[in-house]
Length: 154
Image 1 (cartoon, rainbow, N blue to C red):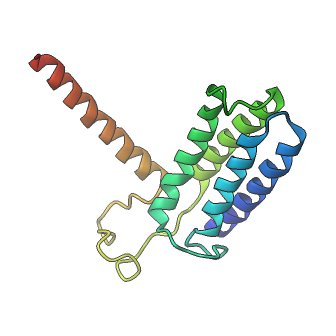
Image 2 (cartoon, rainbow, N blue to C red):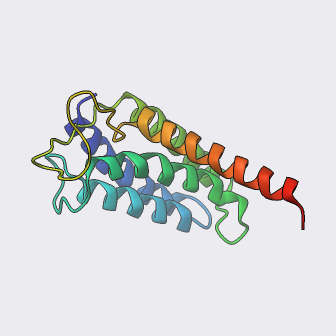
Image 3 (tube, rainbow, N blue to C red):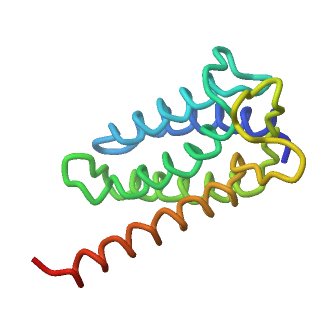
């Protein structure tokens, strides 16, 4: 999916979440999710971004982090909407993560993203698989550090 279409769907999802909040009990989470997706779309570096303040790699990371946090938020009683709201939030989060895996994020060039290490023969971490790879490696490092601290003892 082209990144411009991704941004358009991001705007539409923000609108759907915000308008759905009117129809559910305690819809604050839906308003917050809609606002988060609107900010993502407005600040994206693509053709429909109004502000373009973020890099593509950061946008790809937030395309995974925001829906995961939104999906986990109903576990907190203060943020829990009604049953219909939970269904909308979970469906939107799953759909967005799937859409993010189908998106072709534009690759930064060394001229547009100095110091990113992008170039021939380099793996671009700005894609969802790249983000997942970095997250997995970071988790493995944390697990090794925890195990070594646990085995070292007091």
